[in-house]
Amino acid sequence: MASAPIPTGRLFRAENSLYDLTLVRSFRAAPGALWEWITHPQRTAKWIGPWRGEAGTGRSIELQLTGEEGAPWTTVRIEDCEPPHLLAVSTVDDAGSMELQVRLTERNGETELTFVHHLTDPAAAESMGPGWEYYLDALVAAHNGLPAPNFSDYYPAQAEHFVAEARHALSRS
Image (cartoon, one colour):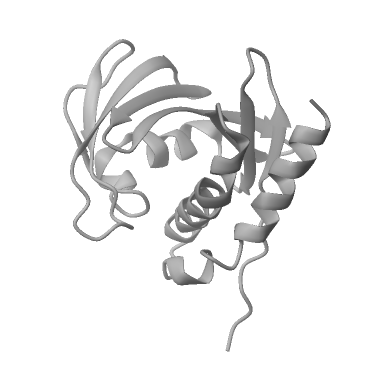
């Protein structure tokens, strides 16, 4: 039996009473090549889900998360798009709202992907953290041609890590 993935996400106090749930992954690819994996619908379908619509800053697309059985299409507004380095989006649906950001930075011949989920309630990291760990590991697997991870390896196994991150972030407030 394989061991559970080790959580890497951290929670930091940010401006305006927000908390930034931050996860980082590194890829042996140029930023432009990795950009395709986070913006092209045929590539996103392999790790987070397909999307439809006309993308661009100020526009909205619809995304269907593949990791969640029977997931509805979610409207995703593109707040900022600076290829191939920055994508900021927001969503509002029955589950609430999310503000997300992906930044790609070239370092030593690799591309570092920094993912940030801006949270108003640090306790949300308990459920959001394992989900984002799963999706980013699914991106790594898809990019490298490996089998997709299994969500049950992430939640609830990683929840306590993110509970501790929330406690730590609150103690620094």
